[in-house]
Length: 110
Image (cartoon, rainbow, N blue to C red; front, side):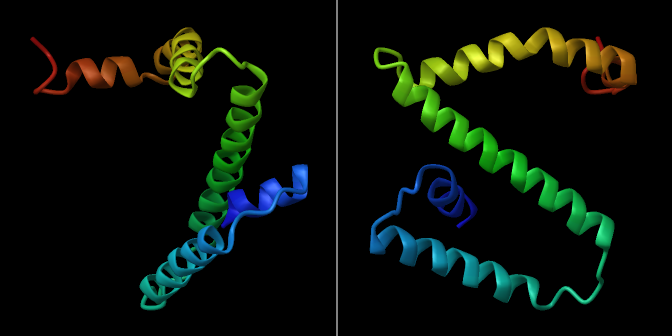
């Protein structure tokens, strides 16, 4: 539902009734599934909201990029996006100590 809302707010595009109905059913199902969650964790909700905002922004960006790059397929764009992010993620993993922690993991170390 958030991507549909983002498409409407950014480009003024609307989806078909079937797509809106399917997304509405998914949203209703998540509300029903989360109704039994009695513990309210504002930090968890905040992190989830931030993750959702970035996911929607990325999805909208990829849609715009795939339409702007006529000859490239979506899979090609995603591949190059992931490929170019490797150096940044590798540096972040080194700085945070995740590489050492992964190497110390018994099932990954030689």
